[in-house]
Image (cartoon, rainbow, N blue to C red; front, side, top):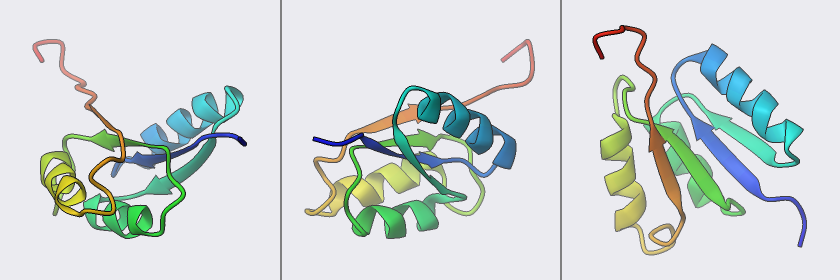
Length: 91
């Protein structure tokens, strides 16, 4: 079995870039998607082992993206980890 492929989904290019750097440093193959629609399209292409999915994105939130992924019989067993980064101390 070769390296695992992870899809990083976030509308912030800096977060995608930093996440890619960390994961590739650990030996993972990394694909990126800028929003939920791109994530679903990429996931339908197959060959993914995990999706790291931002909760807060414009147009299609992480929760909406998760619902679409899990409703598709081809993608329903694909593991998804949800995350969010808050910049405010109060959050």
